[in-house]
Image (tube, rainbow, N blue to C red; front, top):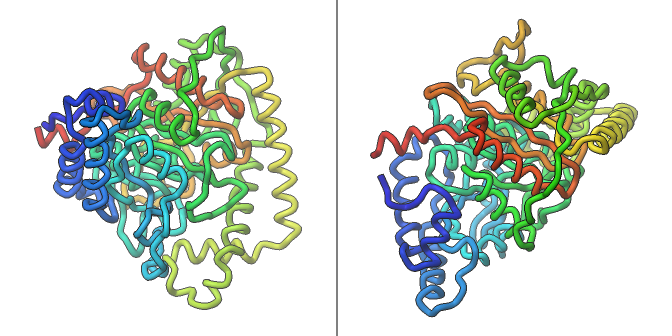
Length: 452
């Protein structure tokens, strides 16, 4: 087992104190990814850049300068984020020959300025359109807890790298659940921040009305630190006072595995939750999210579809074409439904500080499964992974997927903690309290256990 600590906070503390070199952390991380990435999670290793960045961190420590709060912490980014000198593929073969990025995406630059060391780019669904990270060009990313199962998507490569313990932090994007779904399936923390809170400059767009960027981590403390750095602020102080909590009923209490519903009940009881809250427009909002995503994504890629539709991943191509064909009247109806749902969520959060919902309706499906059965219903093993994340994306609120504490060997599954805009600190504090109570925990890392 490597001597490098598991969490970002622990790595940064040891590097800042001179007890661990950033260079050695980078070498160890790069070598572990090269040895253990049978998951097909990383698309390229950035060895030369990582070693140069690590050398600058070590030089700052030696000179007595502050190397930054994330000193020496290795991280990966979904191949949707610009990395200076590299081509941003967005998971698409047709972008493989695109010009290299002139500079890092804004959030990547902020992490690096804080001492973090970028080591890899990560696999994704083409153009971030999917919940499974099955990419016709770059292959399928496998789940670190069972390689025969999906990692989730579209940020599956980033989630699998963190879930496998190969990096402590990774960046992804979340339009309809692309952080929360793979976080749930890979057994880690994944944050969709308040809409507009973090810069999307230098991030390839999908649906601008919904696109957010966020982080995967194995602890709420790591998540809070990385989020604060990307936000350009100090870590927010803990929120004091009683927290008004409710689980979401109706749409969010059905079509879900018994294990996740039981986990929500345990969390609700621990937090002394009040009666469940039903969002009447949830089902309609999910349909609206599907339509608005397809319509905007389809029109964004329409020129390329007309020029060479066969260059697209077939699954992506068909959905984009269908979206581009949506009539204007249908889009307007979807926008009206979305507005009603946004108001409904705002009303619910006016009376509650925290809402609870499943992150995925089930643990990771097998890669060879096309359907799964939940609550007596046969559902799509791909599209319905976003059953509970997609409607909430419309609301623009911060949502943290946390991994339920499970018995050893049980596949992971997550719960969404939902708060009002700007209240990410409440999500981090609640997650830390649930970890302390034994209700939330990342499962052991199987790949590193085998290597020990």
